[in-house]
Length: 292
Ligand code: NAP
Image 1 (cartoon, rainbow, N blue to C red):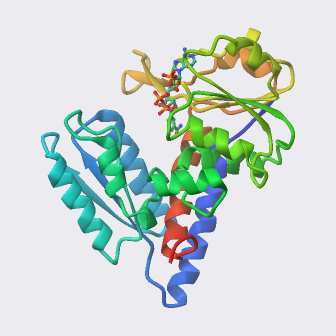
Image 2 (image 1 turned 180 degrees about the vertical axis):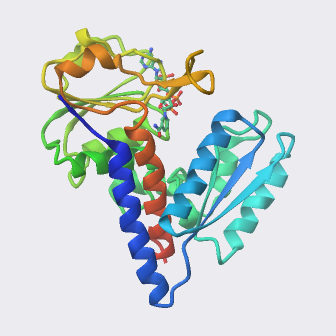
């Protein structure tokens, strides 16, 4: 069994990005600028945004954090997005999800200028990605593809099962694994109404679990020599941990790991790669690599 070290890989990629940014500055270009909008004070979202700001510093990017109160109206948030769309200094921005219930999430996403949508969630980017056209790719799936490439994990022609069909992880992940220039695999997607989930997993060369159910994937669902990518990050109470909780993956690591050729840990696997991909997308936006 080999452990896929997302933390180390992400750190190496951020160093590469930093070196590229230094070259850009020397060549007289402006510093890439990522903005983040955080509505309310959800603990998880606060932590994610903080990590994104730290990653910007590591990459030599400028970052801005726009904090709006929980009771911000939909129109106020849309106005904020329109301002970011117009701000020539901002190369890309994210709106941290989930949003408070009184705000229509899809309306917010649709208002983001797709040329600045470094999270790859605007229909323009999601659609172009599905067609295999240049686009900003959702950060988590992009991070997983990058991780597999860096570890030279062969995916072409393999049977890949994706657990979960969300718009930000499961669906784009399955699309990327399917596309010839990325995974080139035979792909099955399972969700909460799949009746053959266990059999599908047992036949899979690659399992990508993104359902948010701690310890869901057990050893009896995994064939010997499989590659297992664990996207799940559920906070579970742990009185021995500093914050009173720990992050738990979707995979029962202790019993599944011995059967795998490769496996990602939680934490330290997919999570750091997600933030790293957001940085990559921001760099692409600053360099206008995808859209003019
Ligand atoms: P989501 O929007 O809640 O989607 C979960 C998906 O899993 C849904 O498609 C759901 O099926 C499916 N599902 C739920 N329970 C299931 C079950 N018992 N059997 C089979 N399928 C089941 O979640 P998400 O945003 O995709 O995130 C998934 C997990 O990844 C979460 O733990 C999240 O915290 C984590 N995550 C991690 C990162 C990272 O950087 N590491 C980034 C994003 C998300 P239905 O469609 O039928 O409801």
